[in-house]
Length: 428
Length: 151
Image (cartoon, each protein chain N blue to C red):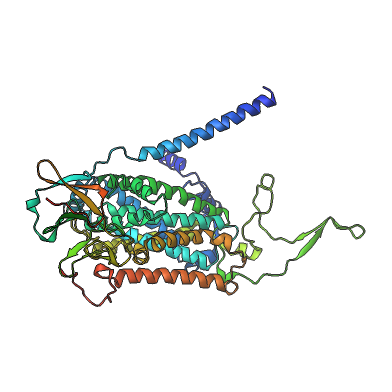
């Protein structure tokens, strides 16, 4: 019995969780948990502050990694075997359709949640100083998510895959000077073929996921170093006039210096780290408003994880990921559509390939990256940010409208067709 | 080692390091450019002239070309790849036009753009007769739409 206790205590080297010391040690003696603070502010855990979208996105990524590795056991990135492997996964492999559907729906979900997370961060002004660069990291993660989705789209090697990638990579070739070369480099050839498939596979299973993991670590680390989540907008008080205190002064001589009064909380590394910490000011009242991460924050995270996993499982039980007939370079389906989140782009491209396919998306990405540096307004209160919120909302609405038009209102030959009209493909 | 020596060796070292990094990056990119494309050849035989009927063009799916044969004029070969985003266009005899299914571009029988986002006319490829009497198409050589091969 003593040996068992000894082994257990060699693994778990903290005080019992009934004590405050144990609760703290659980967090900072554990390599997986120590990204959390030992205590979190109650208000930051409120669902309506963040809708837990960052967590949901991360959990979807975990589902994608797990199901993706499972699928790799049965998939060969070489046409036409790839398509036969997909058929095997669909009809022969135990749990194959279920895992493939989970992978597909989690991927769609991740695109949606990354986007919604970005909207939440924008509307709460959480990209403002000192969090500017973390917004940039977030935009890179958004782009990587789209890249993962795009590269994954080719792998089934069905008609949908083949033509979405043909159209998608041709959009890129409109980029001035380097466009054509870039496409050739990505495809490893002049058309979508076996060289393209192995390239997309390597990007999809090795390079892009590694980049996502690296940037996610940076993203989380910075949230933590910037003092955790930003303060909920409804807790922001109007700016008080700065209180000044005078130091080093006696009634007789001139003051040495007049500086703003500060209630800043500082770290214990005062001797090493100079300067004021650049996170939000925590007042003593707020300090009392904090609770231990264990169990309050961990419980909410666990619930979020379970809800995310069960939702994806439930959807995958009832809706199966589609698989069309094998890729046929000679026969373009009509209409040939990209994945839904690129249909806004395809809609733009149907008007002008260079403007819509290269210039507009490039400007959009640059604008998103520049937001924290362009928006000099220090206030996070929505009433002070009418212009910023209006512009961003316009950006979101335009994107949604384009995607909706591309998804539901475009029929054969990319003609405008209302969704309730069933059209049989053009004259033969 | 004196300061002068340290700085000159240090500078030389930094230059060497930076050029090493640049050369390695170049090598990585060059590594990713294939030297051999395992793709269908760009120049190929398509068969005997007698295989092709007069009237509506014959579509060769694998080669993605349309072969036209006109009485008294001869053969001409059009690319079936839309100049917009690379979808395969389809020739409709009902209106004598090429229609692209992806974004609705329409080309007339000379390959010129009539409608839609396509930036250029369809390509026409050189078609020649080989010594064994077969037709040869070379996708590397584009020709004007009025090019014809009389056999």
